[in-house]
Length: 592
Image (spheres, helix red, strand yellow):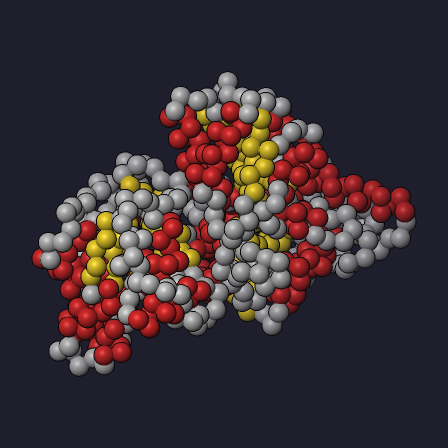
């Protein structure tokens, strides 16, 4: 199902539509087939105007079996189109899905436009002359559904047929079966005459340029490689496979010809340690993880704080605690990234707003890490990691270079002092091991200011603690101000971070269309926050902060800026819906 959704997304992107997707699948490698727990879904929202989110309620639901219907019917818009694979509603399938009565016969589908299509039988019929085993042929029924949808929404079939030929070239029978099933689905829509309408969605008015569909994980990988090129440094990615961050490791492994080294470590600790060692050696060191992985990496991140050398830590947040829901999304690692280390160990924290923004956040994380000699957290999310949208490929010449400014000669009375700092950034000198005359001591014990020698002096520890904190605080002078969109004279501000950008934007736009004055802002820099954040917050009577957690950003805003914040906190392991945010806005407006 994920493959089918991905193909429909690609052909929709080629058609020039703006789009957003929401893949959703079980965590188990082989979830129980035919049960609600085993349902895999892929939601696609596309239009000829700007799309900010995958949408709250689909207009069309394709249910391949009874379990898929039961799991997703509540999401379908009243009056929406329901396309059922009627072959997936036999007595056994109904029982596995938990139905006591066939929903097609008890009136529960009366509020929808229902179309029943025997997709499995038609697929078997289309492939019967191909010498394909019935079991293997049946697996092609998703391509029948894809062909039917391509006809229904006027998607060009050629790109999908070309992709099938390329993808399954080494398995000719599978290739032929999938092609036959896809064509059968497309032709069924053309000839069956059961649909009252066929839909055409014209291209969106996108800014001129070259576009590609990109997921958040893919954008992060491309951003990291680009950053390494801008810095003229080898990229080293040390990681341990974990859902949903593993895809970044896989993407980067495929890009090894671009001076990329990937290291699949034996555990999370080793992945982080190797990345930090690579940074010490003058590489752009990056480690990635999800869920419990950040707990295991915390000691190494603390070491990077003490050593004051760059390290990028990517956390693709997922639902927790512990193993939690590995394939579901959440925003619950903000406080862990900010405070989840022993001792005073501040680190910058960045969060992308959209899948394509992951590219630019990766660039910014590298710039800050290299310039300020500090570990940097990137808080992505499962939703961003797996979702896709059109991304305008930037002109490489428009991207600013990243200068590592390695130390090449003594910097203090003919000697090298590793903790002699830049007066503006407070970043210490960074010397690649083996550089003649720049030998220096390294390790996790507290350093003496300037010399880098081990120091147990209380006053020195106090000074170094505040120097490290001040260095991170000064990053606020080097990042954009918080921008407010919407009505300048609004009394209500909706403030978000991470993947809440899409549903917030949709909700705010709907409220403004009703003639209500309202504003929104989005934090991509969470530590330090933009230097005008407090000034912005104090301009509004009410501040609504939607989050997929129990109120972590709201907690920080209250503590730092002493402002009253209203939270919208739904921890459902799903992205926030724009309708929930819209309802919250109306609730706060009516309460005065």
